[in-house]
Image 1 (cartoon, one colour):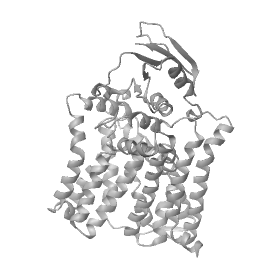
Image 2 (cartoon, helix red, strand yellow):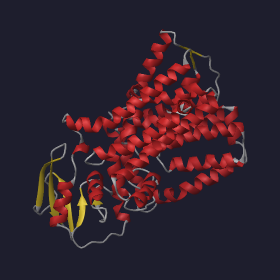
Image 3 (tube, one colour):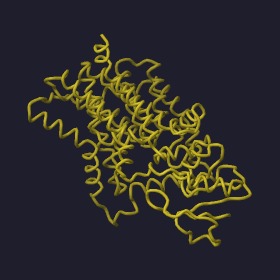
Length: 458
């Protein structure tokens, strides 16, 4: 009986195991991952915006810290919940589209073949994890609206759109795609050109407007955001003149996003284990086509020299359902069983990966704790305001001293904060050519990168 129940709830089992594994992995780490360190720093305050990201994830982290304290487990638990939630939401979406229970499970199980999801998202990604959940939920509510155009469904769509935009700016690519396909597809037109859509618009605008007002306000935070985006996509690295190279970079990243999945599907096709169904040009197929095009045009127009797979992941993760819809499986039950145990095995490997890396002396930044910095500051400069070189340093030091307000030299929104202090001790990586005074302290060869840290009194 127990075995049967487990078999019927494989996705729930994987979601729970993933949450537990992501939460517990943190105890094997001496320091926070980059994204968790950022959250440890920014979650000191409730702001309308942080760095180059919308504020929702940090607000959630602020809440978790209030409940569980500023502790490593608070950061990993939030990521674990989002990872597990994405598995469950993707399964719900696949169930209402595919109908067949086993094929719907396969739509979730094949995520183990998406490297950036099962590795990068599993271990460290924050805003991207939240965006994955929001975009899958968006497709789910669109499917509900196609079936039933109720006020409640429009309200839910508006809620997820607002939450999506407050999660990560990349959600805008989904909105553009949705708007364009609504002009092309009859089913989506009936959703958009319905008076009830005003409910969705009102809810989403209500959620996003305060952040937009902050972003476009007198402090010109949008300027910093623009500079950050340009730096991330490598506009400064682009050669003069128009080039098609960004399209090749984009296609390369798309292939890197899903190449193990494509290889397995290809092997299944040539071994006649799977075959392909003929697909109608429905709204979901059109969304896939237009999403590909919108992103390609963006990278081409802005001559992007960098396209990270983690940027693409949230926008394409729902289309795994489309792939499963297009495939006819000969042995679905067997494939579900195999996929289930492979997924569990990968979770196990991810769980023991950090201690094994440490045992084998494989370099990793999470193996180097920030106690030397925190101890030096607390022992010699306790009465000073501490300013760390970046949010990674600041977040890790805050983890060790949650009772203090820690500042970071690269937090451009600090000007908006009314933080006054008489004495300040700042740390720079390598000797500062700008500083006129001599350092009062130093730490040589710190961390994985063996960085030289110098302490200055301002």
